Every structure is written in structure tokens, then in C-alpha cells.
Amino acid sequence: MTKLMGGEAHGGFINWYESLQQNNILFMFKGDFNQELVNSIVQVINSLSDLLEEDVLVKSRMTSTIIECLQNICRHGESAEDGSLLKPGIILLRKKEDEYILDIGNSLVTKKVGALQEYIDKVNKMTDEDLKSFHKEVLVKTELFGKFGADLGLINVARKAKRGFKYGFKEINDLYSFFSLEIAISGNGQ
Image (cartoon, rainbow, N blue to C red; front, side, top):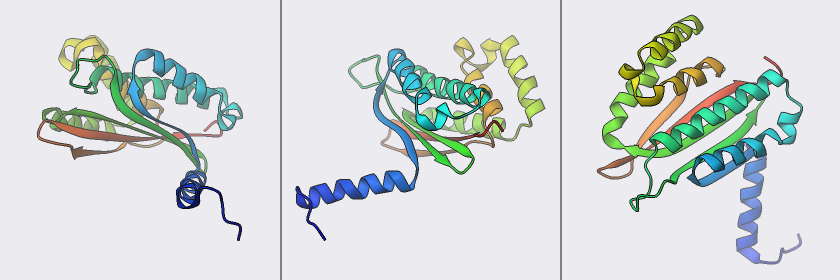
């Protein structure tokens, strides 16, 4: 076996790269989000070779889902304590058989966890017809569901997702928790 230059550190990179390959990671970004970055991420993802081969409907679902999720980070994520408009978060896109898995994460105020969990559970239990009706209801009664119709985002994502959301919350400290959301989107025009 040939020893690679850089020794252990380089070997660690090779292991990390192999792990990304085995899990079929197509795109990953961790950092601060704003609207300009959301637009750039969407452009990069749309140019990925796996997506170039997909049906227009799949690309459309993927694009709108990514935009909704990243805009939610921009609107509802917690920014650094310096008052910055940038919101820290993470996006990971991977492909598994005939579906794309989108993992999104960001911090939020812990006192919001209960309401968000309740809302996601409610949306997860809805059928396609229920989601359509609920979408109309939220449009009519925006003031009941949050400013700017913020809750429309999860409804729209649920309507495009292959199955319900997987999600989790992990307390960071007394004030903040980390929220993670996994969304599956069918590939191959399904």
C-alpha cells in the first residue's frame, strides 16, 4: 500500500470523502443563510448532473421545496446575537434509490419547539386532499397562522414530499434548540 502525502490528516479526508460517496451526498452547505445565498444554492443544485437528467416536474418540486425550506431558515431561524441578518443553518441533499432526501437544520428559540412540533404533526397526518383544503384555509385566515402566511411553507412542502416529514429537536442550551427536518422527493418523474 502506498502511503499518501499528509499522513493521518489526509487519510481522514479520504475516509470522509468515501463516506460522502457511500451515502450519495449530492450537495452540502453549512453556514449563514440570506436570500441571495438561497438563490445561489438553488442554481447550484439545479445544475447537478443527477438533477439534469430528471423530469421537469421533479426539478420543479425540488426547487420549490428547497426555496421554501431555506426561506424558513431566513425568516424563522435564530441569527447570531450580534443582530446580523444572516441565519445559521445546514442543507444536505442526497439521493437514495428513486428519491432525493433533503435534510435542513437550523436553530430556533426553545419556547417555539412545542408549537412547531404540534404543527408538523398536524400537517404530517393530513391526506393530499386535507393539505389542499388546509392551504386554502391558511390563505384566507393568514392572521391566524402567522405573519406573511409563514405556515404555508410547510403545507407547500408537504404537498410535494413523497411521504411525511421526519424531524427532530435537540436542546442547545436554555434558550435555543436545533431543529432538523428531512423531506423525501420522488425522482424519475414519479
